[in-house]
Length: 430
Image (cartoon, rainbow, N blue to C red):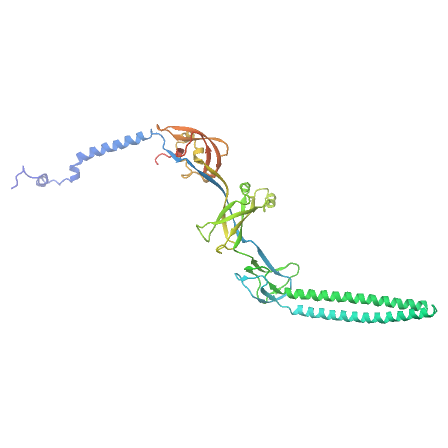
């Protein structure tokens, strides 16, 4: 039999008929007071945290060059794009080139049927031969009447004016004059027939369509068998780009930015076909008149006014194609080495932040896009704030300069590169 004095508590409980207690209940008298103390400490810490000062968001003042740019969107076009048309009516007999084919100046690219034109040429040649025959006949008549007049004049001289009569002599002179007029008319008819023949020959030559320039066919708008009818307007058959190694980018500059853009400025652009790659360009000219000025006036001035700028683009690799949509960035001005502060630092006001109960005031954390991009007027006096060693804020007066919408050039005797300026107050609980 087991000695009760040496029996374990579990065996005693078993002997007495009681259920054994879990281990955690046996140790409750130790960990429960500790848990209560820990909860009180956390509660006190949380309650006392509200009395701490605000947590400021800061950014470093930098000294570097601020490059101001203007962004615009447009399309690539060939430098010289030629539309090939037809002045001749008739069915298309042959088409010798297609889109993307390279052609040389003078190369035959299409032929229009010339049966009707050939008939007109034959008729013109017959008219010319008839006119020449009429001239020969008029000359022969002139020669006969001239000889007759000369005989009558000789007889009148030998007869001392007795014969022939004056009437007969005047009739002979009139006949010679009529013959000379007939000869002149026949010569004019020959010239008209020659002109008509030459016109028909020229029309026939234009029935053979030739490339006016050396380049690449961008568009083909005819097919064999199609009838070309050139009545009042020249019919477009092909569109040929003269040289795609040098292209042109036409972009629309907003009226707010057009004053910064001028010829000779460097630019770069991107296209969707080659993401991440930038192509160089150069501003050639900026139009003085807006393409939608009239429309804007008619609509009551509500439409956005833009001005077209043309940028010269080199395309030696042939990667760029006409019609591609491009986004261009034009470098308009560089400030040189200067102090740069974030625009949020110029907009920060300590009193406003405390009155609003804190909150985020940082262009990268919750600030609206329109407010983020608003600029600070150049030449105005503003204030930025830095944090002192004791946690208080010190205001520093600065004079603002150019801005790119995110950072602004400032001048100040007290502000140095590397100093941290306050841009906002971090919201409570962050």
